[in-house]
Length: 327
Image 1 (cartoon, rainbow, N blue to C red):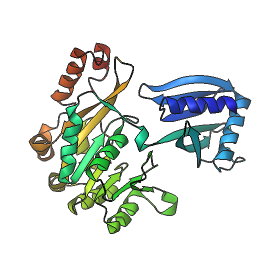
Image 2 (tube, rainbow, N blue to C red):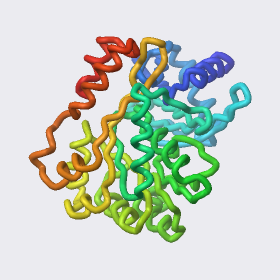
Image 3 (cartoon, rainbow, N blue to C red):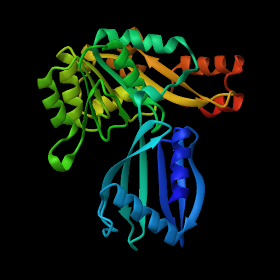
Image 4 (cartoon, rainbow, N blue to C red):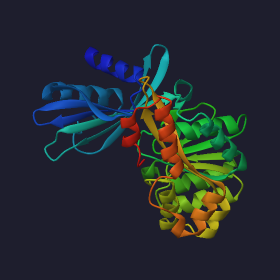
């Protein structure tokens, strides 16, 4: 398993978020997920893949003999003095061939994102001072959780912050971190009910995906908490529409919604990664909430301006700007 250890260490060094071990005909392929998407690392034989999956399942206290039913597990690795938590998920296909996905959970101190537009983070930091609900959107791996943790940590220093996630993606010793477990009746909304009794100053909710969670998030914000969460939507205007689809009334959104943020991680000309935000706040946000005709299904005009600014400063290429024009 030395070759695999080298692969894991390489993933950690490059801050890969997920590693996939997937069957492909009579062999296995190993893929990793980063800001550029999913990329192939290498292919191994069927026997080697089976041995690798069995080894990892054993290390993660999963049932090695079970090849079809979904399983989850966890293990800890150390790389250059840094402790990395790995979350494993396995499932078998109709023929019994297993797939394994490994999620890398890094400590908050080891994660940082360069800002394409430096003053944007300051704008978000101003929003979190007002409490209420701030919603984030963007594809998987676009840094939403990192942004929420960064904002909460700075704004709520020496105060109680509770996170509710599925699964926990970043380890932060200063937060109370709860993980969803539906089998144990620990859903998002159930954990939010428990969390309200703890009376934290701020909540980070990994995702609002159903009506119960949406309404509990609104309730928490109405109670004077800062609530940071994510919603699946293609742009900031879509976030508002999605909350309405989940049963939240306009009047409640108008009361508690203080900001909406769509974000992407962009490759820069310096072979690094920079985060770009599309923000909706203030009068523009209020107008979008109260008038559906002011919710175009696209990015804001400011998003295009920021991309153009990045090109002019030679921070991103023209090709990158075109690629991310629609978000």
